[in-house]
Amino acid sequence: MRGRRRDDTCVFGSHTDFSALSTHCSRKYLYSPQRWRELLDFCGFFDVEGVDHVLDGKRILLIIGGGIAAYKSLELARLIRRRGGEVRAILTKAGQEFVTPLSVGGLTHDKVYTDLFDLTAEADMGHIQLSRDADLLVVCPATADLMAKIAHGRADDMASTALLATDKPVMIVPAMNVRMWEHAATQRNLTQLIADGVSVVGPTEGSMACGEFGPGRLVEPEDIVDAIEAKLGGAQLLAGRKAIVTAGPTHEPIDPVRYIANRSSGKQGYAIAEALARLGAETHLVSGPTALADPFGVQVTRVETAREMLAATEAALPADVAVCAAAVADWRADTSTNSKLKKDGSGQVPPLSLVENPDILATLSAAGAQRPQLVIGFAAETDDVIEQATAKRARKGCDWIVANDVSPGTGIMGGDDNTVHIITEGAAEHWDPMPKAQVATKLAARVAQALTS
Ligand code: C5P
Figure 1 (tube, protein in one colour):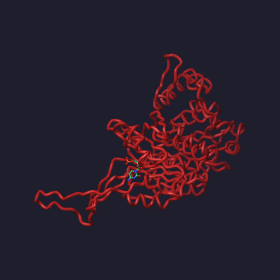
Figure 2: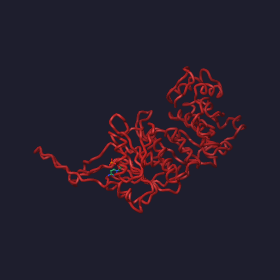
Figure 3: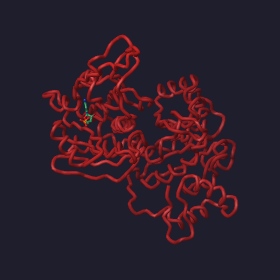
């Protein structure tokens, strides 16, 4: 979150600063949401140029659980309002340890509901009414405890009671320590919640506040609002369409213990699969070996080699769109053996001869009647990115190439951000640097536009 200031008196550039400011101000200066809003207003938070009103008139009941990621729910509330939605918030007891009712109220422009037995609140708007008055209930962050409560139908505070009393769709955005996320109990609760029709957004993978690494991080607020938009039906632009996405590296065996590989993380391809699914496409992800969790709402086939990837991709046809984001190994060892190669002490190195792998993108592009209407390839280049990508588009026979510069130093390979150029017939469009998830959302929207125009 970046505050745009109107003068030089107040600037805060990160979530952490904002959270600290919130605590500081609420203790020292601000006694009402109105005052709080005035401060934010003063700092330029509510400048509304560029507001798009995709969520116009939609009412979101935001339930904020008690986790370190709770501060991001403030940004979420701001973004929902920015897209035209209304937000009313319930802040759990644990949530209040992380963000204050004043800061939440300042951003929702409304009373914040905190206690089931608050008679004023009940008289004002009872918990049943509260949960019915919304178009969507969003639990963010959804802690392990909140997930357990919802899965088991507990109702011992304002949040869980509203969730049990609702007849509206529920979306949870989990965030917790990786071990808690992976615990059998949480995974059991997750399965139950999905079976009960709850939408689950994330979590994503990365380093966490607790110092561990893995799945458990809250999805970025921008992506949560995209998911809300998709859930509320405004953006099911790819409903009834089929998509295939390839992602990750391939591993080409040399012998049973060694293989040829590359540094692809699979992040961009996974994000694209998730974004296409969010727009309603029936999405099949064919993935090489990665450390990533299956994206939500996507059918995943995991493979090792290029030849397995081709077979799985062809088996997934027909499709309306194919996005080949995998970093397929160009060559495989033709000396692959079932016995481990041994050093024999003579100083002789074993010969490693390579043969070319099948080109999945080119194969799909030339698939005749089976060819997807739109075939999109990637070009990871280190020099002359646009020229190379333009030539690649012609060589492979695909419709678009998403080109990016993966020179060492760009941090793109394995990183969370990307800078891409979309090469279409006779044109190149340059996108600003942005998170891979946002590239995915934008590309999926572009795919929807192309397939439906
Ligand atoms: O030729 P190059 O590997 O640079 O081409 C990159 C594009 O081609 C990517 O879209 C990649 O997924 C695809 N590709 C493929 N099969 C291969 C090699 C590349 O689908 N064997």
